[in-house]
Length: 174
Length: 252
Image (tube, rainbow over all chains, first blue to last red):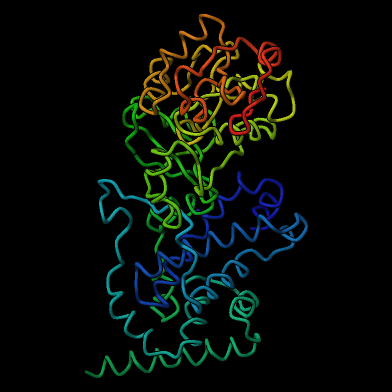
C-alpha cells in the first residue's frame, strides 16, 4: 500500500485503477457485512471510491504519499454510510447490457446466519468487528476510520466478539 | 474453527464488476456513451462528469476512435441526470446552450474559436476568416479551418456553419461535404445559393434602402425586399458603395 500511495502521488490517473482493484472487494464485502444489503454496499463502495479520487486529485503529492491509505479510504466510506448518497445526478450511470447478474463469486455458504448475528451487535461494535476480522484492518486504521480512540475500538471488538460467542452458544443449545 | 476464522471467511475475493465501471465513469477515467438521432443519421454522444466530450457517427468505429483520440475507454451509460436530457434539444438547436462541454482535448485557442463558432445562429454561415477576426487573430484563418476539422463535438458545436473564406461550403468532419450540405439545407441556409454566390465571387449582400451590408445568410438581409438587395464582392467594395456593416452579422 505504501508503494501504491507513492504511485498515486506521481500519476493519479494511471495508479487509481490499482487502488480500485485492491480496495473494492474489501469495501464491498466489509460494507455488505455492516449493512446486510448487497446493492447498498455496491452504491456505497462506488461513491467512496469516487470521493477518494476527487480528494486525491486535490491533494499535493507529499500529502498523498504520507497517507495511511487503507484507513483513510475507510474513513471516507464510513462517512458516506453515515450521510446520504448525494450528487449522483452529475455523473453518467452505467447501463448494464446483457450482463449475467451473478458475474462474481456468489455468497459463501452460511452467510445468512452470520448476517443475522452481526445485525444483533450495536453499530460501533459491528463496524469495529467487521473492520478488524472480516476486512483485516489493524487497530490504528480502525481508530482512524471510525474516529474513535484505539482503546474504545479494542473494547468494541472485544465486546462484539463476546456477544457473537454468546449468540452462537445459544444457537447450539436449540 | 474459531469465530475470528469464520469472520475472515466472510470477505469475498471479488466485488461486482459494475463497481469498477461505475467508478471509472464517476471519476471521468472512462466516458459514457449513448445513441441519439440527428439530421445526418444516428450518432454516438460521449460524456463524463465535466460535460459532453465527443460526437461521432454511429456507423463509424466510435470506440476505437474515442480511445485513440482521448486515451480513455468508453462504457455504455445514461448521460448525467442534471443535464443529460438537454442533449437531444441541443443537437436539434445546433448549439451547446446550457449543456456543459468538455473541451480538454483542444488548445485554448481552439476552444475560443469553437465557442465563437457556437454563437453562429442556426440557418446562417460565416467564413473561417470572420472567425479568425472574432478571436482577435485575423491571420489565423487556416488555424481556424484546422480547428473546425478537429472539432470534437460537431452538431452541438456547429462547425457545419463555418464555410471557406471564399464562400464555398467546404469540408466537414462528421462524414463529409454531403453531410454539411444536408445540415445546412435542413437549417434553411440554402447551400446551393451560397455556392452560386461564391462561384461569382460575391461575399456579401447590401440593402440599398438601409445602406447596410451583411453576410449572405444574415437574417437582416433575408428580411429585405429582393429589389433592394445588391451583391457586394468584398468589404472594400462595400465601403466604396457607402455601406455600413450590419450590427447583427458583423461582416468584416
